[in-house]
Length: 175
Image (cartoon, rainbow, N blue to C red; front, top):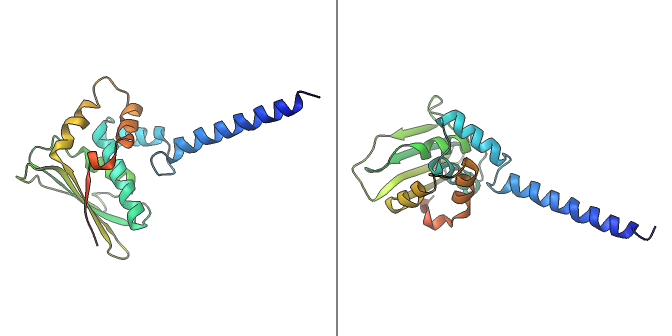
């Protein structure tokens, strides 16, 4: 009987630890999806899961939160800068926001001649017209590229979500 309080405290600590770990897994990317689900979606849609996919998910989730919108309640326009390696960010945004070129809720514009940014993103709430705009500066390309070699998809997702937003993208407008 004298070990019962110890056992109860240990069970409580283990329960809290498990709960915190589970909550962190689900909320680390501000969503009801787990890391594994984000990665599986990225691999299914894009054919792989690199840092640009993770960045698109992060920006898409940020936009939904800022706009007070749910998935499928926004329209997105993505414009690539001159030196952008690919439109991978658009695929990540598509996954995060459930937008689609087929439904005309996601538009990827032709590349521009502007080399100062990698990608510009505009996300508009369908119901109220509120808009947030993001720019991924060209200076973000190198750190994003360095995240991919020798790392797992999970590590890439964690690295992108672990970096301060200002090192990856800038909020350039909200109306």
